[in-house]
Length: 304
Length: 164
Image (tube, each protein chain N blue to C red):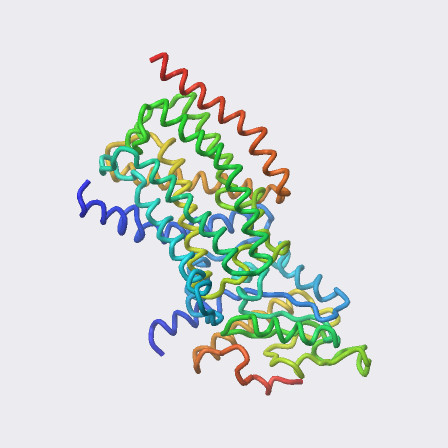
């Protein structure tokens, strides 16, 4: 992959130019699905765009010193990491990539969560600190399962290259791994039943309590981009491999949309769990599941 | 007005985020405000979102007759809402202190302390009246922000003429 294709992927497709409208679209789908499940009409199609533009036009409270600087830096770092993660997704067949790009993708997808933890603590708000502590605990519990699931898929195929994984033929290990990833996604995206860190009305807005205006707009955007990256990863793994780009790309979007719809429906149908229940869920139930996936992957690998 | 300002004005009207504050209300108006978000009235169609933090909000919804204890809290929260902002007084209490008038525990009505843009009278007002009030406040906010410089927190209130 040379510099031009890398830049084109990062900035145009599937990078920023494509992923920002898709992020808004997914945020709308999430809100609309919840509204429809509750028997409401829900927000208009352009609502996330209106919210974003409106937030850009709001003032921010004056902050000075290092903590003020950090509070401005965290949302920008989160947006760029999430945007970079989307740029790595192999949407176009034979679009390049390199050995180990799955590991880079996972690292980039993790940065927004770390930024949220840091942002809550640097805002010096008591609600922000509670939210950050919850986010950190949640992060530790779901990531074990999430990483084990990814490792099991990678081990079955002997590679951490996304493009090779996209061409993986359907197998029980793949389905087990994808199921484990799907269980982790609500926690990764902070939606019900694992919406603990930003538990609205309970601890105000969690780590985001002190953020306003353009900074909050960046957090909303990074949340949307996280949706695109996380559902895109699942779509990469489960979508059938097509060599023609104009079939492959819409197929990728359609599969991502399906995952968004599934997660939104789950979010609308469930209530928020307490932190101890969440941690127990991930450490006791799904960890067994993930260990099962990785052991079967290793077994398959040594048998072949 | 250039294109960017027109777009901003359009978006501000369509995305009012609320922060709800109780200044000693009997809880009747609070229930009606929440009812306006339920499936029957569905204020989210108009982009309304009830926010947990005053920093995120555009419109401050205040219920209650403003007790002495709550005056300081109201001023603090009003300062925490970032500009451009608007205030909606929900119910008859913040407008006139209602049946509690002349009580020595009150320091109302609300517009003695902060500028109020829209009054929604009623004891309690109907949810559709509250939705209408919020939409009106969003329009006022967008027009005011488009006209002059951005409304700074603590700047001279320019909506005193709306007083009852």
